[in-house]
Image (cartoon, rainbow, N blue to C red):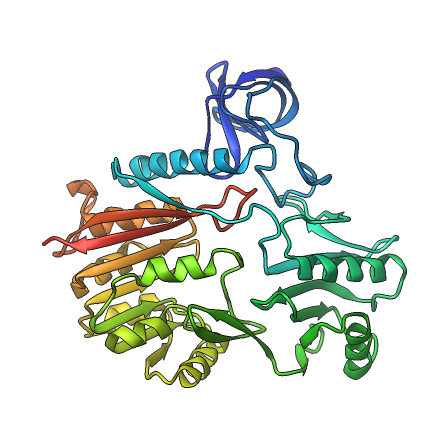
Length: 435
């Protein structure tokens, strides 16, 4: 195998790479477009699979664009800045269809409804690593590496987060950032005015009060600040402990350790699409978080049961329900454990699991509940394909041990481009009970 390869890119695959073939091997190379001819060098090989590094695009695609960020192809945070936003959506839809077919044996010939917003300035949350070497600086980790690449800007950040990063970077490079910081996570509210900071120290170099004063003097926009001394495993909080987000006429308290959607432009659209025309006796919200979908569902169902294993999020959920004046029943446990024992018979189920998805066993349990409608919000098309294969009965009989008695059909698929410039795909699949 030659170290240098000349490749014709056939298509993009999930994960950001382009796929090509050379000398009987399948080759994966990043930062390319279908139809391009490129020079690449092999980095690693496993059997007949080669992972390569891009050297040069010798025959670029017509739609190739100039990246907006000077750090593109170095920091690893973005994968598609060389592709215009509308082309990113088209390619992501192709990847989604192919993944559903290949991994789930699900053929979807219907429309994939697109939901997109501004391609830059969209993130309301970011996490920065701190390089301890001199000069000190904030940055992002290289892909699959512990190497931190310092950056000067990050155009996917909201204006408030971009300002916060610039201020912190200035402190780091001028030596005014407290020592011993390992990472900083920043979160902006829905108005993009106030911020919350999580700052993790190896150990506090000064008192918590002195550290808090340093950050608050530099960043008056801080609403809440959480400091972590990892050596003593001790948290120190100044401020209310949360930010408030507004969406769909509801207010959501989001604590430092709770999850909330990161694309500030598509939050309202996502809420409307998931809860559209949902009504009945009982709704089940799995992986409910702070109650993003729970609150509107509580207006249209007589009873709503929510399930989440994150204790901070469950506390936020109860607070948010009280503010909204709605009654919910929350279970602080893993959704998979809840599904094993529940006797609830919901009319409607919404689930928004992490990248690992629901899992085959839990998907069977979900199907057996017999809800008329299921809305599955997924951030990974591979695990979505696996779970939909169970719910729709598209698995081969030989693979089934005790398959679900109840089967579903897909009625709608939506693609929310929550993470422009990256390979990530957020999919909404709406399913209807058919047997």
